[in-house]
Image (cartoon, rainbow, N blue to C red; front, side):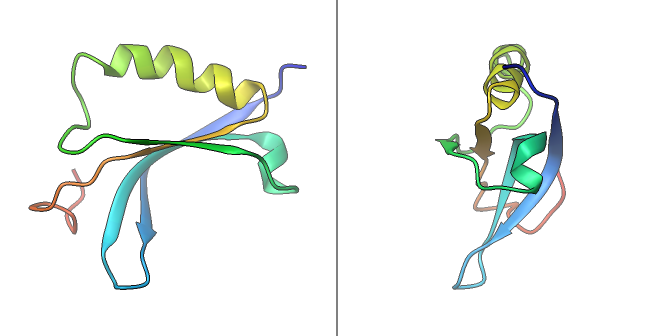
Length: 83
């Protein structure tokens, strides 16, 4: 069953040690009321590049089918800046 989803372009995930991880997140609508399985992808040092078109195609598909997708984009030099 295909469901609606929302995406968060600029999300921050704060770790227990205070480091903030930048992320893009695709959430199925059902995740607002019940837990959903999540897929995490770690990609350092990139936010907008030639792979973004792939992300825009694949990650919504997962969210429409009930999976959260979290693309973690850690940049050690810019981790506390909005980029």
